[in-house]
Image (tube, rainbow, N blue to C red; front, side, top):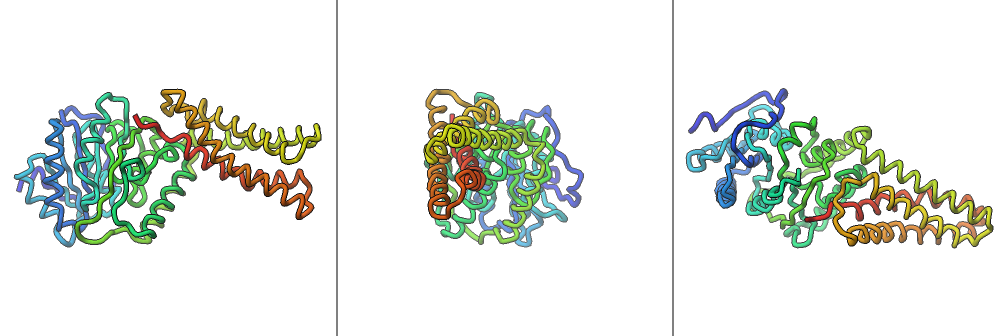
Length: 389
């Protein structure tokens, strides 16, 4: 066994990902593993074959958390067969996110990738991810289950709902870079080394991409569709503790809003839109004595147009918009989300006034503060995601 390409480590605490290196390695792919002995040989051989087809200089780094089933040993036995393979056995540390960072620490590539070792990530997609960097305009390429031609095979309804719920929660709490991505919880992606070295990472749990997107605030992102496959062996390691850890991670990122200019701008625009909405309503209804429903509808439309203009020109100004169709799509998207909730707001206002004899101004303010903030979240979620190119 090549001692230079089989590494045993105990202390991960002080590790950082080194900056740009002088090597000619184009891509380093890290595979974090724990108890994946059954299929790891097949995955490593298949990944090696796919990377060879790219005709680039690459390396594969498997980082194993001292699996009881000796995954690390089975992988290490392939070092002579796969000269680009390095195996790291972590004897003390545990956790997927830190395993990935550990692998990147020992890597040499200008691009850094990660994929699972359980067979659910089709290895051939790594080529599609790498090719998105051909014009050097992207900083992150993400394999997404939630694009056309993507999907998930044989997941139970409960698992799908949990996954979608966790994804939506992340997009609503962190509407910056994360709010524009279809699959921010993907564990299959490639990122430029400079993004990692320039970003202070401190992940909790297993969603390393979430950490990268939230802290780096990069907007040069492209998603590539893929079908998430069924496990060929073993059982899923996702447990209740992972969802708790994920929630902790979200909250920790959320309470650092000053690190996210997009989040601060988003909240300011939302507050401004709601204020404008209220001012227009009072002017039409209270000053000019317009009809209640018409006043609320026109006020809501003013808030919608204000939201579109400010988000496009300020909050999400870095998002790619290449054609008039892109702007029309965003206009329609916001109107669908905000317009649907505004219709409900009009029904609620009239119900409060006619059924419960509530003062019209109080009814308006109540529905404005309760209903519309949720509409703004949905509007940005569906309208300012990145455009695929």
